[in-house]
Amino acid sequence: HFHDEYLICAQLAGHEECQVGGKLFRFDPGDVVLLNPQQVHTGNARGSSDLDYVTLYVDRTVVEGLAVGTAAPRRAPAVTAGPLGGPR
Image 1 (cartoon, rainbow, N blue to C red):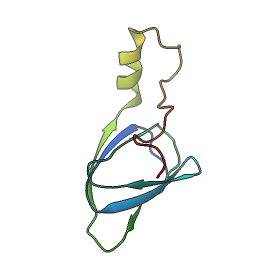
Image 2 (image 1 turned 90 degrees about the vertical axis):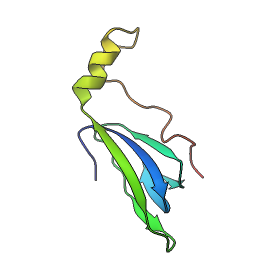
Image 3 (image 1 turned 180 degrees about the vertical axis):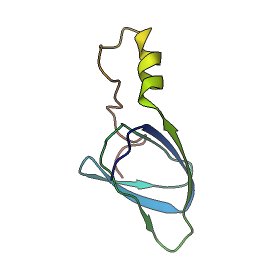
Image 4 (image 1 turned 30 degrees about the horizontal axis):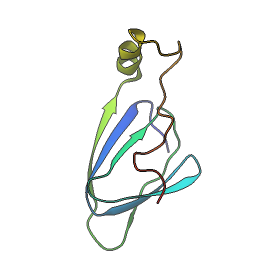
C-alpha cells in the first residue's frame, strides 16, 4: 500500500519487517523510518512480541513549503536514503 503524505514512523516496541522499494527492512524499538508520498511499502510484525509504533503523516505541501527557502531542486523533496539505518 502507499500514502499520499510523507511518513515519519517511530518503532516503540516489537519487531517489524517491511518491504520498501523492493528491499526488505527490519525495524526494532528505537528505529525511525522515513517514507515518501506514494512509496509502496508493507508492514508486518515478526516474532511473537506486541508491535507498537507511532506514525506522523506530514502533508506534501508542508514539506514542499519548507524546501522553497533552500537550494533544493524545484520538485517534490524526496527521502533518497531509505529508512534510517538501512537494510538489515
